[in-house]
Length: 94
Image (cartoon, rainbow, N blue to C red):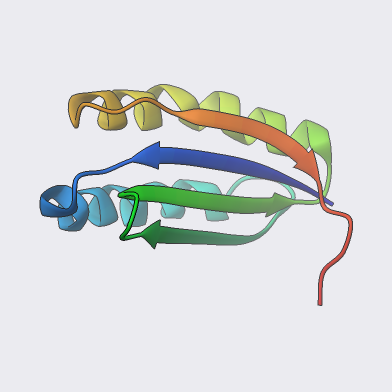
């Protein structure tokens, strides 16, 4: 298994707007080949969203990120932030 791990800052006053965008994007992710699970969290102390989206293979994770990257980056940049993203190996899950 592999995961797209994405982090980006969101001002707390725009969290509802960001959450709506995340929900909209998850419909696309669910249809991507190899999709297993996705988790989005918000750290109130740092104002940062952390997402982990799990796929069967690294190739599927990379393809999903490439397809969704432009819209994610556009939305985050519109809120004054920048995106840190990478594909990683999942080494253990429960």
